[in-house]
Image (cartoon, rainbow, N blue to C red; front, side, top):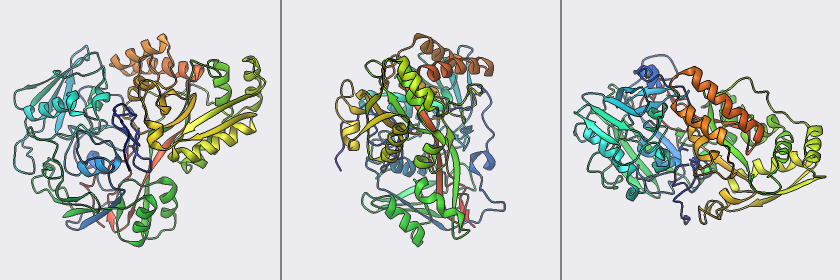
Length: 544
């Protein structure tokens, strides 16, 4: 399958190819990824097995064994700098590590960094590195190596998929080494959630050797739990245990074998037939029923901040009237939509960008519910006897689109469906005619983010790089900047409330529900968990 020019796409990371806005995503809005436990600047989560992904079952882990994993083949090159699809991300996360990991609740977990502090302004951040860490080839990890990794990601010539995450926050030249164990980041503006941007929440931010040259499949050297021993673009990859891993005695496994399958259905058949033990990218609709029978398969479930966003373009009719946008929002039966398009998992949405998983999410905004009489009244207030519009989407969102069409029809609104191929939907000129940013109404998948700013800033700020609604509100812009600069819970919650109420009232985007994620596995292994961003940490996995 050929790829479009994707130099400015959103981050989604699990459609049929996995989804993530890094600027490099053809079927992705993940990441990259998005979400927020409010940072206590000097207080990372505790290290160790419990915080870093301890096994789900009690007991001493058993040493040995090889875990077999199924996944669709990566549609992008296996390069941690440029990769933006879920399969490639999961593959390199077995080998390379981050300064900070994110647990199932998006809390910060120290990895290669043991601590971090900021100045009072929130613009200068200093990270202290874990001592004694070496790469799998024996090379020592130091601050100069970490600086080189971020310099690489910040260099526009590298075509890094992380550039959009750092946009307006950190620029090339903003990283320096302070001795061997400290790395200092000088930001363009105060950003109190900055540790999330150098964590797994920015999935390209793994630490690589200084001389890394884009040849990961030949020289995939990292500080992570496994070592890449072979890679075939058609069949899969093999990994062995890294005996130099800093978090001994992890990993408990001897190795990981990854097998590529043509699509999700083939991957599922392999899991059911016993050819693989787990998946990188389990589809909730396919695997959620498998864990109910008490058989050989288990399904772990987590909440997420991944979301399908119904974007309404506010700069032209019919959605230039707020009442029309509110009418569409009140026409939705959100619990039924979640059941139909989300397998019943996840949290209901309320037309703002603070998922319930975010600590700063307001709790005092009444949940918007279906109200057909209000739909009629709002359309009348807007001077409309009826409403008809076209909804544009790509194949992974067909179920969502059909459900929206059916629900709105029951409320007297006609929706014409416009399905495009994913290549066409995300293709075109990203500055003037790509469908996902310039159609009147569309559905876009955004993968879970560790901080709400990673959704708010690109999606609804006036100068947002992925502002498909063409929405502009100075009060929201000011609150978003204040939110990013806030250093205490009270201020953060105050600004979150302002932002959420503005979005709930103006409705440039409609959030029906926030996704839940799943991961299916065989009960012969323990410690295999779902993750809100679909990441796979197998360092604590062991035989049952």
